[in-house]
Image (tube, rainbow, N blue to C red; front, side, top):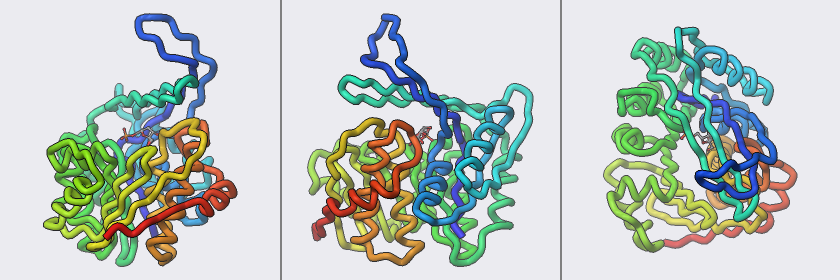
Length: 313
Ligand code: TA6
């Protein structure tokens, strides 16, 4: 079984407008409300690829109930822990989607800090659910947890049981997470620069930065690079995943879509090349969607014909 974990889920409010103008009143053309958070998105995108998963996470108050309802609405198995605590509501994130220039700007709330007893509840839940051969997907913001090693703690419990750990985090939560030697990390370009401690300028510098993480024994590193596609390290082999050209409506959520396709490929024992072609197609289809979650499976199958994956080394 695949378990996704969303420590800081959100309700996403997507705001469509022509052009954002500071210090001026900007009229919205329309808004969409959908589910936010990365683990929830991975579970939904897996579902769209015919792969079942169980969504775990922390939901707070009324917004938390809304998040659970939205997730169940996609037909995902939800085992979130829900709490009613005074003044504590799961966060809302805002995404500004500008029609002119296709800019997508995410404004994310931090959300209420989680008391330790709540993260301990989640740790106990994971201990009780995970079995050998399962997969645990730790993804998204965790700044609502003071302990930057939270992902390492969860990962170690899962690995001790014999599960594979997929990690998509940022900043110190990612750096700390490396110490638990996950099966796969999916930094985006900025997050890899953060780990490398410098601005990476060329493909060769990116490859060298990924190689410099060998001390953490990560079987797979998948770096997503926005409209540039991705670079994937599998063992000592490197692959360049070229972007599929589509008309981008909303790039929010494309990284989650890419990650979900890799997890699905590992689950189905597909070849890495096949898996990466699917990942390119699924994330391209996600970019064509106006939402931050989901993609069109039929369209993704068409786009896969256009996918180009090249072995670098
Ligand atoms: O990747 C898209 C998305 O998951 C949005 O739904 C939005 O909620 C945001 O990213 C959340 O990311 P974060 O890193 O804050 O967990």
